[in-house]
Length: 107
Image (tube, rainbow, N blue to C red; front, top):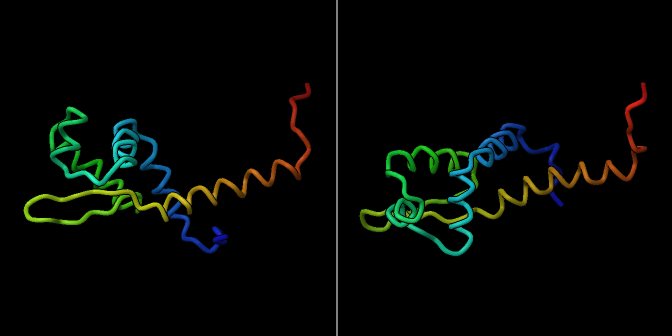
């Protein structure tokens, strides 16, 4: 298991920021199935390439997607290792729940 305290906080922040947009979540859902080029993503999502490029850049900078160029097209796929980092970060909070007493509001 990766010790997330050793991971740069910026990596965690940028990952969760990238996951905060509905269109970026749609992109990730499409990439679960297979690697896709920008033109296919635009068609499936019904958005322009310029709009999608902004979101793909955010996903790429967060490390959630990888890109490779083939000819004139860029193909995107999921970078599962970054999803593991985010998942392990959240798992640390899951373990805290077993240690801390339940919290309730008392007036």
